[in-house]
Image (cartoon, rainbow, N blue to C red; front, side, top):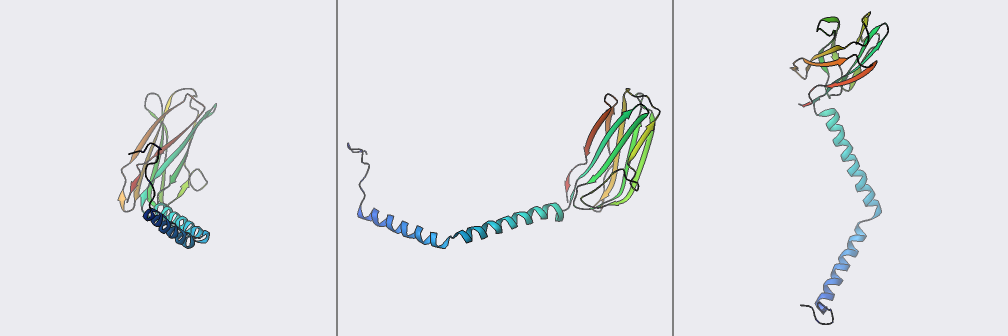
Length: 187
């Protein structure tokens, strides 16, 4: 209950003694916690966090494969460039990529099949002299609608992955880009 003067309660000798004990304990803690110890604890915490990130990215097996595709057309034909990116923590094996270029009626105009025995973890391949992931279609009319069918199949960590196919309609623009992701899986 509040007294008329606005004082809620008067401090007693016991309250003063309790406050003094608390201040002494706080003083003891400030002697133990020094800037050097705070710095050391911060560095130790940072090391633990970095080690955890490393474990997730490199040690725990996970599957994460992307196909990045660029389509271009010009007066002489069409070009489809593909990059295969293994972002997973283990190598993929028996890799097969099929690039199909289809006309408006669904007929196959051209196709390219790419095979690779093994792609290491955290690596990518694209159109280099030794890794041919390019489809060039010469003589086909531009500014018509076409479809690009991309099929990816591989073995991962002792198991087969079912073929995954993505379909992209193209032809309205001179340059288009697509990124297709396989299903992310742990273990």
